[in-house]
Image 1: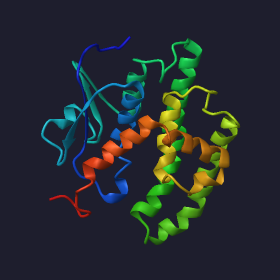
Image 2: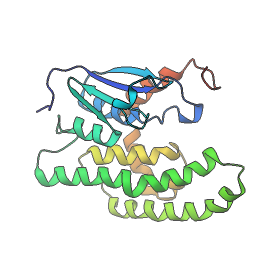
Image 3: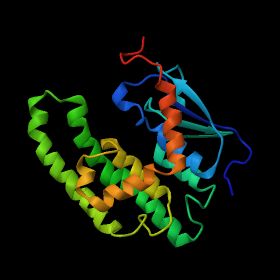
Length: 224
């Protein structure tokens, strides 16, 4: 049963982000979860950060989530909350539920730091000599992590078999940080196919289209 019933859902996102971040802002993860379970929601844009926003999101990031009297931040926590509403994202069987939550933590704690560490070198420091020197070892470290996920996945459709869960949603969202084609993920064919299955899901395509539409007519330069 929903933890908060019959309450409108609102999420925040930035009103402007640079082109490379469009389609990657983390409200996408929450949008995707909401689309998977068919819940309506509203989007509130922020930026510059309004006074008092730190009471919704202490770090000035997005998304923040509001549902009646409930306020949440951190995309992983929000996705888990949404999963609690519907077994299409979080199984009701206690063992399957625990394992789905386990994989959501693994995506955010055991894989994403390596993905972000590698991706940031090209996105933010492409001309820095130290970044050029760091990149080969960062890629090697990332490859080891991706290899472990690929080994676990094997020939399964999803991480725990034939059932998609919040663990898959967050793992695929993390893998997408490096783009939807090529990159280190493509070096692991089973993992690359897994990522492709995830982003082919209609709820993801809808969530992505909705986020991109927000920035469609915006200039590439910084917002005034």
